[in-house]
Image (cartoon, rainbow, N blue to C red):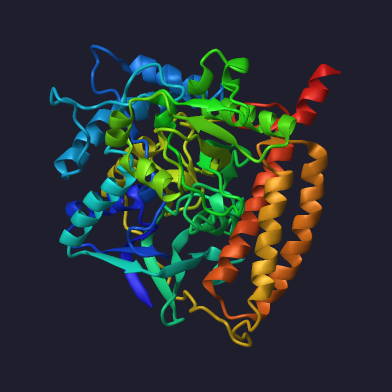
Length: 522
């Protein structure tokens, strides 16, 4: 067994920011970070756009940022949370700068602010088109400088340790005492006991297969929280990024940042029609839900596999300076943007719901916190405003740190059992896992995508139940592997998305159900 004062599951901006702060505050306490990939692999790493924050109150204002967030959230944001996050933003960004994070400056030496869909002003600080990569670099550098942080790469969190494992008769009030963690190199399962556990495990993009997320985004933290009876909400609000580079084979897709449309790119059909003007007066700068639904509508009308992003009219020299990574990737795919359009399609991008937390990041389970994309804070409502996610992670990581500065000591029970896999064996046929994974992803894309209806959702439940039964039977008799656990987690997440989709009787933000329109018209 391993004992730690704080256990952090995930190595993105949320987990690393908290770990750095708590390690600096309490040099005599130890922090363990577990991450299933290498230490820099996370959703944060792939964040292109930047951090939405009000840094120039002469040209922008907190009120404008708040209103943009509320409008995008379509009436389901928590106004107090929005107010808090927006107003705390500048402090958190300046803290990143103190930690040697680099943001782009203009020739005058001030921040080169970007503008993205749904924003009324230029307010997005960024580092080229690899802002997340730069954040990871700066945060990991600080982590490595702190001797009381232990970072375990290639360690997969299997399940949270809660009162259920202690065989208590009354588990109405549940507490968390750490997690069971698989060392992916050795196959050993560690029992990591912790006074406080933070889930900072990222998103769920791989549930859909076609996603802008890395393949590690399998909803592990959410599924662990669900199995631990933690309260979860708003799972129906999946944000699909409108412009992922189209590849016929699907899978993890390269993201063409929303900032490219903010820079002036047009969306066109194969015939060249600039169709966004038909759907919204803001055209390409409409919020992501509207742009994604509009593209989906065009593809259904035409039967085409993708639409196109036209950058040919832009200042290509300036484009290369702003988006060098995107420019190079297009060239790599034999798409010179000076002359050719970029084929794009919506892909699963961001989960607006998740584990319910209060303003201090506390979940409904004692000693368990959540931060980042796996959490549901009330900031995003029915649809996240572009570049508000990194902002949210920074503010909530700070709030959790403050809450734990004064937290009373937690007594960890002595009778926590080690992981028991007696009677199990290593699964010999991985084809069963891969077959069910492909079935699950196709099911979610075809039945639970951008535009839904109740008939398809009910069919999805029936198909999902069959996959669930087969995978659970395999899980009971197998020694755990990362791929088997990931599949099991994705099935849990898919169940939550489908069930909470059926429970929502009105269309809001990123959730669009044809059945709700039919009911309203009767």
